[in-house]
Image (cartoon, rainbow, N blue to C red):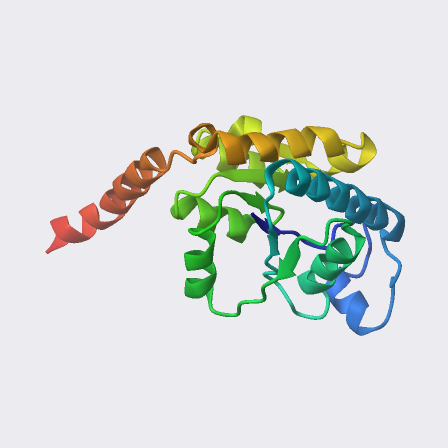
Length: 202
């Protein structure tokens, strides 16, 4: 089972964007309490899935620049897992990353790019949404019920609910497999509309 998560912050705004604040050494503990709660809940959910399905977790960081450091989140979750059934796989090649998502039973997506790549491979996806665009993307592939807000996940301690969703995705993959044909059809129509004036002008 693939896992792509990110460092998550609460919604308190700041005058200085985080990527610049990080370079200046400011706000080192921004969102620390909620991030710690997220790590513990995510690790517990993954442990339950591993115990119930014998799944091995492949933690796949995407953004590894200093101010994002997805790999640090992956390491934190792995260290909190009690089953020990996890591996961190850091891939810099997007093509290779996409290929690996196609080999997974399910992808837990806390990153939009990971969700798009896995969906393109036909892999069942479950979302941890940190902003509304996740719900739009999951709705496009007819999986809107397979996405939970990360705020709700932490604030309401939805460990059990997430574990149940992931177990169901492994046991009944067809119900979680993204329907990409409609997206492909819309994209094709949009491209045709873009090029039609150019073709007519020739």
